[in-house]
Image 1 (cartoon, helix red, strand yellow):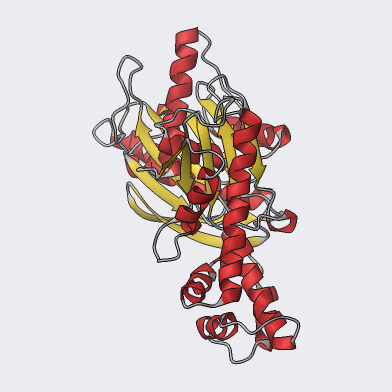
Image 2: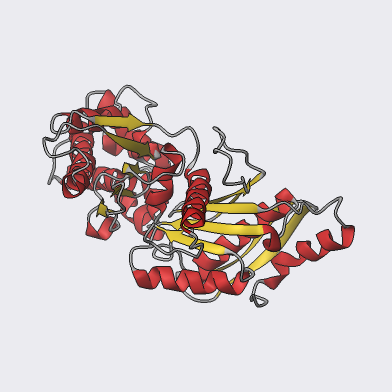
Length: 388
């Protein structure tokens, strides 16, 4: 472990040591992180002896939140983040002087430091870190993050680096990797695992390459429909007036400037509730956008299920499908998640939808514990990359 460039955020560890055992919690802990294009969450969970079973729900010592940690969707900026730690509020200037990776790395380090500070713990108490972030799609992504984690933590800490979809799956299965997960928030991805460790994914390639069932995809199509209706290339739609009212704009011409002034994925995706409201009001254009999104999301799951044969040879075997993300949450009459399940059931009647009771960051911590337990049984405790 070496002093990292943002070393001042770890100064609380020295303060804890000076205060003594009454203030510094010496118990072993696990960090679980879930990061996407919107925010990054880190939880600190006490290490549970392998002889015990995992309690449901699992105990959590602290939780911290920071910004985007997807290196594909963050860029240059200089900012001061304010956190509330064990000793009260503290702030740290982030040095984001390179595109993407630097900003993502800063967000991840800050959120881990904040979680440990809130728990009254330190890096020396950490036994494992499971870091599950969107944008981890290739072994080179994993290796970069692993090298960076080795610089921050002591040598005894074990690291597990995954795509954020893996933590989402684990949040619905108490840390076990079997079945399929569908994430539909700002972005979307379907990811599946078999009991013997094979995995497959569909979608998750970002908006440019067609995550059309995602929040970004739905909202981008709504913006496009509004512009097409305005210039005469498309049918009338209530989306135009509804979006203008939501954004406090007076003319569809202004949508162009609004969109490109800050084309961040989460900002665009925030318009999804407008699309759902218009669809519930009978707007055919909005309804078609949502029906197409349902087909896209269902097709992603079906592709994974077929490749892994999660449904068995006859297509009727039961398998868990963990459903995660704001797009799938049943908040309105037009229930996208329910429609996705109905569509999947036509081909795979054995699908068993699960709405997780815990958030993906806790799923990441549970996954780390399960992986540590497995390697402990095998007498081969070591750090793992992206092959659980």
